[in-house]
Image (cartoon, one colour):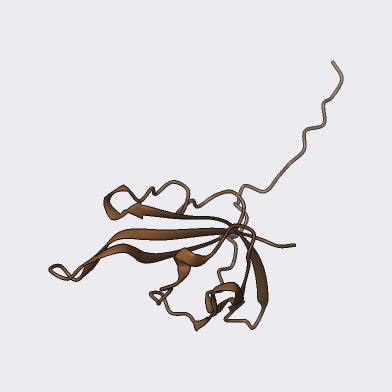
Length: 121
């Protein structure tokens, strides 16, 4: 019986992608130029349109450009967790802001506005 050569691969997984947090987001079409924090203000997010370009500067000083694919309002209780919070697949930019009617009794907005953008290469 002839010998069969079997490739050998390391058993250790590849290291996770290094995360560099954004420090600035620019959406010129809606006049947004905002330093970023884990929670921030995107009061005009609902005015973005598909096809518009956003720029994000990360903590390493690298500028990345993204094209808006969709902007959708969801009632807070119906915010889908599969697409905006996906941990696999192509990298993208997801911005979430409060929107819809403001309830002064609770101090909260009824909806979330979700903008999804993909990298421009």
